Amino acid sequence: MNILIIIPSRFGSSRFEGKPLVDIHGKSLVKRTYEQALKTNLKAKVIVATDDDRIYKHVQEFGDSVMTSSEHLSGTDRCFEVVGKLTEPFDIVVNLQGDEPFILPSQIEALVKAFENPEVEIATLKKPILNSSELFNPNIVKVVTQKNGLALYFSRHSIPYIRSKSEDQWTSTNHFYRHIGIYAFRANLVKELSQLKPSEMEIAESLEQLRWLENGYKIHVTETNFVSPAIDTPEDLLTVDNFLKMNPEMI
Image 1 (spheres, rainbow, N blue to C red):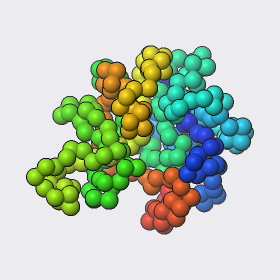
Image 2 (image 1 turned 90 degrees about the vertical axis):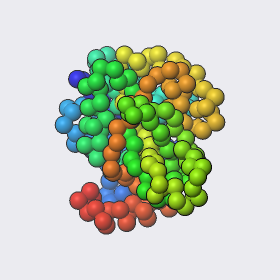
Image 3 (image 1 turned 180 degrees about the vertical axis):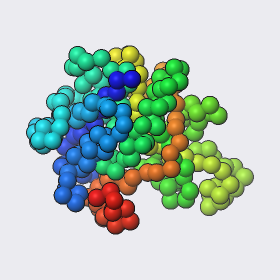
Image 4 (image 1 turned 30 degrees about the horizontal axis):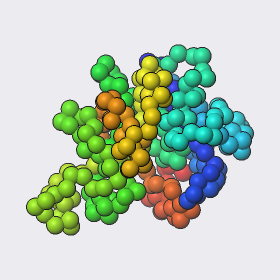
């Protein structure tokens, strides 16, 4: 399979402006994400998609970047524009969030492996939730799946609701999963997915994957046991420092 990994990256952010260019132990956040993508055994083409000239020029110093429209509402929409600009044929398109500087190459590989099943249209990842602070944090997206691995629903709310137990008992009596926001698509679906209009559930939860579910597309979810620290605010850089102290091999 010919694999294309696209890293959407924008400078403007209400919580952390300029995040892609922030220095993390001598490398920018976007460069670290790019390098992690290159470490896979997929022989994939890797491109950063941005609407900012500063990010574009920075990435050109070490890799490939493409300028995209500033009108996109989501990173996936930005990825779809890049696919439309390329003349090379690809089988699978991976949307790797630009703020995933410590994503494991094996996680990207596991995501792509799902497409060995010809029925898989879209794939993503999930990780078990083990504590209440994650479960009840609306910034951590939750997912429930069918027994065959297909997503039933994604939500910022804790799902499912455990009626017979107090909330402090939920994680010890039921399985919960957080969604890890990396997606892969069959390339022949990209055009039709890009033409879908925002849906009611998507707008309510501010989760683009609900648009695909509402329109009848199937999302296959693969389980992983690793999640890298989220970088949403400048304060999260302290969490990253602590993470790297515990995982010095990732510096």
